[in-house]
Image (cartoon, rainbow, N blue to C red; front, side, top):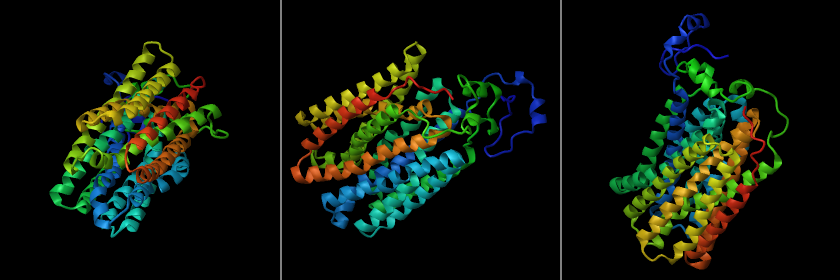
Length: 448
C-alpha cells in the first residue's frame, strides 16, 4: 500500500509511525521524491570504484611484471585469476541476494573487496598476487546482480533501461578514472603498492555509505513519499517487494532467452574485458605509449564508453516512449553496437597513427557500452523472485568470458608475436554478440 509522503530524515533514521504518517497531509508532497535515483547514484559510484580496483592491476602490470619477472602467459593468468572466484560465486551470490536482499549483500561484499584490495599491496610475487586477486573477485561477485535486483525493486518497467545504464556506466568510467588515478599515483608515489592501498581505503568508505542509505523495499525508506511509490509501482500487477516474495518454480525465464542472454553476455565480455585487461599492454607494446600516455589514452577510451552507456539507455527508453516496441528498440541498439565494434577491430590494424588508433578505440567503446542494456534483461524477463539469480547466472557467463579472454589473448600474443590476430579475435566475438542478442525473445517481458 502506498503511504503518505514522509519528511526528510537522515539515512538510517527510523520511519515515522503509521499514526504519525497518517497525520501528514497528502498536499505536503508537492512532487515525487527521487530516492530511487539517489539509490542508483550510489550503485553508480560502487560500480565505478569496483572497476577502479579491478583496473589497478592492468595499469600497474607493466611495472609489476618487471619487478616480479613475469612472462606474458603468467601475466595473463594473473589478470584472469580475478574472474575465477568471481564467476564461481555468481549463482550462490544471486541466491543470497534473492534470499537476504541486495542491501546487506552489497554492504558486506564492498567491505570485503576494499580489504582485499589493500592486502594485494603486500604481494611478494606472482603467486601471492594471484591469490589476492582471487579473493578480490570472490568479494566483488555480488555487486552487479545486486544492482539488477534493485532495478527490479526500485524502478518501473519504463525506467529500467536508464537504471541499467546508470549502474553499468560506472564501469567504463571507473576504468577511465582508474587509468588516470592509478597511473598518477604510481608515478607520484613511485609505488604501485601505495596506489593499491589508497584505492582500497576509498572502497571501505563507500561501503559505509551504501550500508547506511540503501534499502530493499521502497516502502521502508524514510525519504520515499507516496508519489514516488506510485512511480515505482507504475505498470506492475503487484508492488515490487511483494512480487519478489512470491514463490516460483525453476529459473523463472524462457529457455530461448536464457540461452541468448548467456552467449551474448559472454561474447560481449570477451571484448570488454579483453580491452580492460590487455588494453594497457596493447597501448604500450603496439602503439608506443609510456605509463602516463597509457593512463591518458585509457581515460579517453573508457570515458567515451561511459558516455555511450548513458546514451544507449536514455535513447532506448526514449524510443519506447515514442511507441517503438521494447524488443525492437533494445535489440536494434545492441545489434548496431556489436556491428560497430566488429568493423572497428577489422579497421584498427590498418591504422599507423597511434592517436588515430586511440580515437577509433574510443568510438568503439562508446557503442560497445550500449551493452549495458543487458542489465535491464533480468528484471524484464525473469520472475521477480528470480531476478537476483538470473542476474547472477548472466554475470557468471560474462565472468567466464572474463576468465578466458586474458589467457587466450596471452597465448595468441605469445604465439603470433603481435596484436593483429588479437584484434581479429575481438571482431569474431563482436559478431557472436550480435547473433546471440537477436536470439533473445522479449515477447514474454514481465512487468512485476
